[in-house]
Length: 480
Image 1 (cartoon, rainbow, N blue to C red):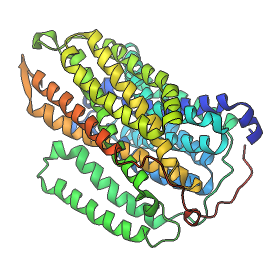
Image 2 (image 1 turned 135 degrees about the horizontal axis):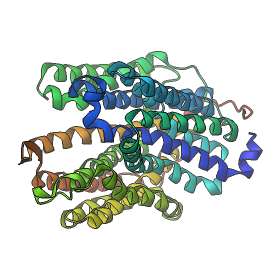
Image 3 (image 1 turned 60 degrees about the horizontal axis):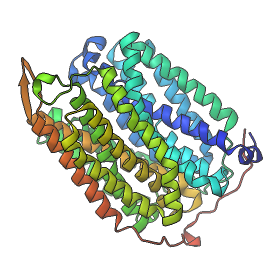
Image 4 (image 1 turned 180 degrees about the horizontal axis):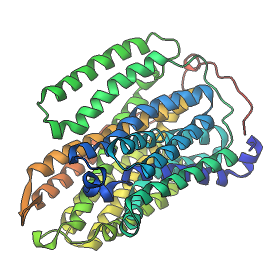
């Protein structure tokens, strides 16, 4: 597909890239319906089975900024295709695997597909006409939340009426279709960054991220004061210090820390961590409210499929609001959209406190929260791209996606600790108490308010990127 064809058919390019983003984000909730059955399915313990989730998180966190830099250097569409191919391959490995290690390997490969959203946003910046850019980026950015919200009901229906392998066969088929569509309908970006890939920088980033996220993810199981957990945190801190020293001295770093330290980028990434926390909090609390037995006095007793269907409007609302959020950003600036999103999220969690007793109430407050997330997700890429050189778009978007992942990982760990310590008995089972669920809702509301306060530190008007900070970019003809 030529660049001129892309300009004539921007809707096709946007639809394909957004579809790829939704497909990738579905992987985050793909195994949620079968989590209770995973130990039996994989013939292992519950602690070992949890690696099916952790492996995807770790792989995606490392791959996202690295793939962004590779895209800037060697072509964003090329790396995008590699990511969708790895996602498809991982799905096939999981589908044919019947034990722990094949599934963990497959889920790791699926995690390597997560950079698709950041790369897709960067492709849009390079190939779409300016008048289409804001709405398209907002839609692409919201695909992360949309796929996560819609993935639960879809996966629940498939798992309930077929079998667990069918989840991965379906995801493999979706990945193969998206790979073909990207190959034939999405043009290559005409921009390249100068320099070579920073292999030592990528290794140092991996050495810092893996132990950090591993400690956050498994600290609840191992104990937060356990020697292994503390050693991982310490190793991560040392690795990041050495990595930062190297990145500030190398000519073409995998992450430009000087650009990242610009006030607009730094504050936006900090706000992204908090927004990621609030987004994932809804995914952890609302299924519990909907599925806990009515005998608790606060659970609504719905099945997994029913709960997923009640949650689906949130994902659809997030997608529907993204064009409006883009118009707000265009008229009043992305800072205003991000601030509005954070405040709406906080209000949605406060609204949950009186509405959690009814299924329709859960739909209402989850829809409000999703609308806030949609506003925030539409604004964050715009703020990032306004403050970095064009040749570093993919790497900067990858780092912002990583910031969101840090928020979701932290949320999972914190909420896990809260709900594990605030429980009640239902027969022989120990389940989260109403007080525990309300505590999480209040915590998420406060985090949304903290995100709003953080956004106030974003400059009202972004200063142009200095020409000296822009590496030489070699325009090349669009491929494919």
